[in-house]
Length: 469
Image (cartoon, rainbow, N blue to C red; front, top):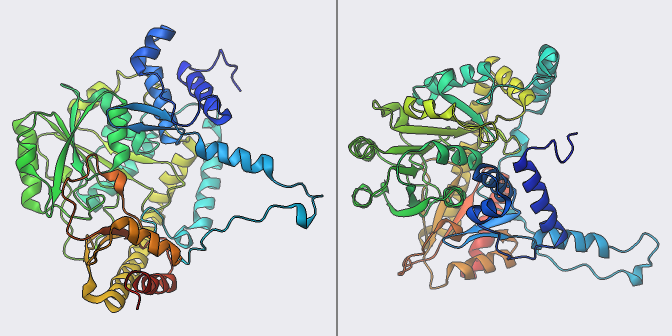
């Protein structure tokens, strides 16, 4: 293990700040110094500071507040330490032990980020891990390519070309350790003014990463056909982040004409489109719409995909396909910025794809989630009928539910929790909540990580909680 002085500066900063947060020396809500202020104070470049802050943000030790900066988030870690310290000893009598706090027992958790753990191919994955270690034993003492293992990128290029029509070559692919990492790299590659358009509502982690790296966020409203081209044409930006195949969180799928119009905007404005195809493998109604990148003939689209939604979020591995104009800038970045995931996991994923396991797993997962998708739709229609409206159900692993009631979204979530059901409102996805709220409250239900029987029980419980019948 390297000593403190052998560690890269960004790693030293990360560990020091993390220790201060966990120990409580940085109380919850304490504002961290800006990158510029810390740069002046420590007399170092801003790159290691930005990298350390990105790592702390992605791991939840700090949170980014729009137009305010970074703040320590110590409460969860302190509570865990306090619980451990206050736990009764084994010799304490039953009467001396404090009564456990009452917590609702959730019979159904419609977590939009969860996957079905029973689908993960444990034996096959362990087998490919073992084979990778044995086959690559001679390389175990060496660092890999910062863009990722070439053989994995070659397998990825073939998969993306066949499944999503993506125009990719191994040289243009950069394997990463998650969306926060990929956005952090992109902020160093995108030319021009540091302003980026994002979907409103949209993925808050991406917004936070752009803001953390000094970008001004320009929210563009999302309608029933995706991000608004009319509004986008009125703002001055050189990049836009979109989720066209299944907009997060509304679930809207961008039609083909709007995709073409977005590409035309990028060409006319010499701008880049960041296409996040986070769950493009799952579509239930209609024919698949080509990815934006597959329609791009001018090199204006950065395509980002992930293994988290199709395989497991426990594997921190994603990838992006860069246009040639940005690829040339990638090699100039230091290794503190560009680094790939574990070589062992990359070797295993390469074998997993090459041996056909990935394609079989996708088919199995798509069939399983299609059944769950049909189950939750049928359950909602049977139990809630015309008292709700379902949208965003054509693709992906979650739906949006509009509840025709005079209650607020917060009240619906509270009533559901009291009945043992968790639903979600995605308030964080709004940079600026609309001045005039929707006529009826909305919430979001994921179905990938919940069993069919629990879906039935959960939806029935929602009917009783929300409508008292």
